[in-house]
Length: 164
Image 1 (spheres, rainbow, N blue to C red):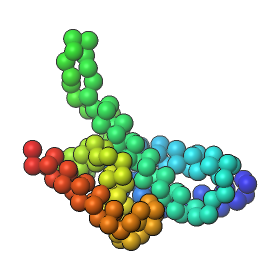
Image 2 (cartoon, rainbow, N blue to C red):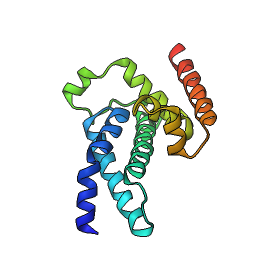
Image 3 (cartoon, rainbow, N blue to C red):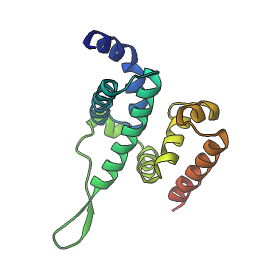
């Protein structure tokens, strides 16, 4: 499988990197998540036959990128010994990325990490990967109506975060 794996990685690296970067928003986290995605895909390929590498890798990229946002959200706040909760500044961002990041993008990413998994995946596939409702339904093996409902709930919950 090593020769085949090299071709799979080179063929789909752009898809994975692009999907992850659009969700996590910085180079350091993107690199980490991409490595996780390919390691997980390699392990899965050892246990089962993969029918669609692009589908599997897109799914893993979206899931792991959302996991990264959730972990980042949890890491932003720490409890001191006195019980006070304080916000940590992200040390993983590069200086030019700090300037490029907007408050809106940071708030969206933080809010996306707080959504239920299905809503976060639907939102990411729709707005980061620009997939149609039909494509999302096929990707997640759900109905188009379920996609619409999850997207509606996600937008409503995200809107409530931005209205605060």
